[in-house]
Length: 354
Ligand SMILES: Nc1ncnc2c1ncn2[C@@H]1O[C@H](COP(=O)(O)OP(=O)(O)OP(=O)(O)O)[C@@H](O)[C@H]1O
Ligand SMILES: [Mg+2]
Image 1 (tube, rainbow, N blue to C red):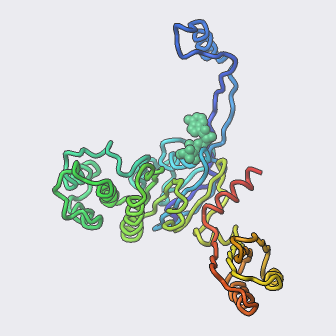
Image 2 (image 1 turned 90 degrees about the vertical axis):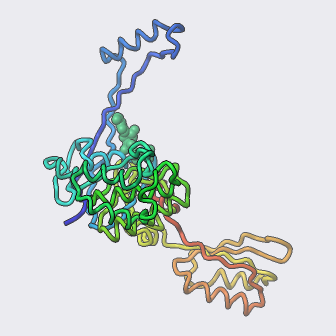
């Protein structure tokens, strides 16, 4: 059974574009304009209805026990997808299953099996800072009917045992983040739907949170986290799988490194060479396995910079080095640039735009 499976999932919105009347914000300034605008809105005059397909025929199969990052530019449909999965919005077409339960027919089961959190994981809004972690977890346990014994486990797993009876008001952001993880562990939900939970959180705490989610919630509790984010570096580092959305469609998905290699096959090798004879540059250019060769010219009087693009740097690199050394050039600097998820993101989205 998949943690999350979507079948032809589609969600459209109707966007109303009000045209023709401009209303000043200052009522005294333009009372007539305001009245006209209200009149038009009320009677649907000068209104253009536009259908927006926010989630467009999405078919996903997400196995249990994975940290999955949902990536995509603004407006690509991430929030809509998560809200549909959380049963906060009805799909227009298609359906989805969470731990085998149909989002259309088994709403209660979805609530039991999926925890939806939008916004900061360290969100003070749902934590009373005067309480201690143990008290907060007790409230949660009572609310959701979990055995209180689980509180100790949740505190232990999230490394909060030492501060279990300290007021949350004294906690650093990282500790609050761990408390969020503890609440998640306590709820013991097999699926978490998180919408940009880390925006506004520092890099260190973000990393701490990712580590906690991955170690405690995903690896130990075997839960699945579907996680919308704009943070491509963290996604590349921690995600078991990434799903790339654009204009409502899933345009690429897979393990980060596999996805990168499948889309961005070439890597670049950059050399800075001291006293490089011209015939060495020619030989380098003619090496097999090189897709593109760029002579970037002089860095200083004696040094030149060369870049070669290849699908197989492991083969090209030793050959290039021996060519330079045997030709009595001196290598000052060499660097292999591996493509990142960010490169993929830019390339795929740009292609789709073009
Ligand atoms: N309530 C709504 N009414 C009309 N259109 C909407 C509504 N909510 C979202 N949309 C549109 O649906 C599309 C997808 O929006 P959504 O919020 O799901 O994207 P997102 O990927 O979460 O974006 P972001 O990265 O900015 O959070 C956008 O074009 C948006 O304008
Ligand atoms: Mg969003």
